[in-house]
Image 1 (cartoon, rainbow, N blue to C red):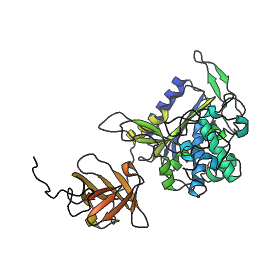
Image 2: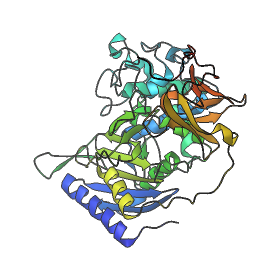
Image 3: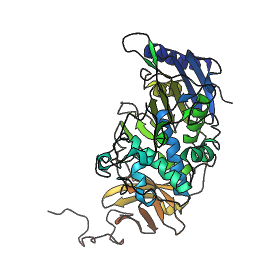
Length: 448
C-alpha cells in the first residue's frame, strides 16, 4: 500500500479544508489515488468515520459507468458505434443518430428530458417521456451539446440489447467486477443527506431524492470515496477485465476538438477530457474524468494518466464546492511527489533498423521511430509536422492510432512509405520512388 509524505498530506488537507469552509459545504470527502490505491483521503464537516464508506450521489459520473456498459456491447460485436440508435432502440426521434454520437454528446439531443425537472421529480419510462421532434435540437455531429437525455437513451439501449434492466447490467458487468460493491442506484446503508445551502445565510434545506427511471443512466448512482477511487483506478488502467486497455484509451480520445491547442476541454466516449495549464513553454497535463451534480450533491473524479494518479471529491450540497478542488489536489500531488517513471530498457525493433530514421514528404523532413509497445511513430524532424503512432496489423500493414493519421493505413516498402495517398521517400522527391505526379527530369537546381 502506497502512502504520501506527511508534508504532502498536510498540503492536500489544507486545500480540502479551505474548500469545505469557503464553499459552506455541510460534508466533504476528498481523496487521492495512486495506481490501484486510495493513498490519502479526508472527511470534513458533518461526517463521521469511516468517511470513505459514506455514500454520496455521483450525478453525471454515472455516465462513465453507462459508457462502459455500451462499450462492452461494442467489444462483444453486439453493436457498432456507427449504428443508428433505432437499429437497437426503435421508436425515438433520435433514431438516425449514432451510438458514438450519443456517447460523445454529438447527437444533437436535447440537454434534458421533456416534462418536469427530472433530477428533482420521480422518473418514468422511455414511453412515459413522450419524446418528440422538439427533443432534437441540433443537426447530427454539428457541435458538442451536453445531453442527459442522450445517456438516458444509451441506458435504454443497453437494457434492450441485454434484455435486463440497465442497473442490473451495470452492477453485474461493471461495479462488482471493479470491486465497487458500495455503489448502488439508490442510497443504501450509510449515506449523506443532500442539502441546498442558502446563498445569503448559513442555513440549509433538504433536497428531494427519487428514482430517476429511464434517466438513471445519466446521473442516478450513489457511491463512496473508496468505490470512486476504484473507478479512478480503472481509468488509470486497472481495468480488471471489464474493458480492454485499448478501449479505455479510446474512451479518452477527445471528439471534435483540436487537441493540439495549448488549453482545451472536450468529451471522449463517456468521459470528459481537458488540458490544464496556460504556460506555452510547459503545457499542462491532460486530465480524464467527469464531474457530477444532482440536487443536494456535487462530485468530481479526475485522473492524470501520465502521472498514474487521480483525485476525487464528494459533497452534499447543491452548489458551493470549488469545481477546481480535484484538479488542485492533482497539481499539489504532482508538485510535491511527482511520479518516478520506470527505467528505460532496450527493446527489439518491430521493423528492420534500415527502415527507421529520416524520410521526406516532398521536401519536408520526417523521422520514423520505433517506440515502446511494438509501435512506430512518424513525426516531423526538427520542425512541427503531422504525427501519429502506428500499430501493426496481421497483414503487415500498420494503422494510425492518433494524430492526423488516426485510422489510416501505413505501408512500408524499402524505398518508400505509403500513407493516405502520400509517399514518403528517403531523399526529397526521390526520382527512384513512386512519387505521385512524378518528379521533374531537371531535378533540383536553380530554376529561374
